[in-house]
Length: 181
Image (cartoon, rainbow, N blue to C red; front, side, top):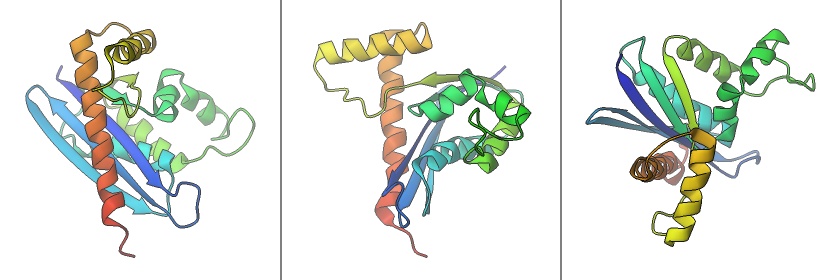
């Protein structure tokens, strides 16, 4: 089974304001091959952009039945899948535990269809990690990463963190260019 790594990030300048601009970025990696994608929307939210990054990655895949590892700094995205929030959401008619409508249901439904087509693993990465930080800070970030995600080498951790930084840069491309509506 082919192993694909996907690194995602979403961003929103002016999140929660009526007029704002959001962007998403993703990197798909298969062996030595890499593909970078980015896009965005006006008048959106950070969480929608986090989800759109993964949706765009799925839409770029040409095959089904892949083994996919998703690396994201979004607890919203990662926890939904790792803690299986979506199971209760669906069982409760797309309502949260507090009986409120699930936000971004349209995007969650798209994602769930895609995840059923592949073998998925989700990993949480600390966002905006400074890879030039003092060694002690990187050591602490590495220990935190291991605690949340399980065994990875330090070199793997640093590579994953660098890809997350790049996904963040991609997410900001649309924000910098602005909306043309």
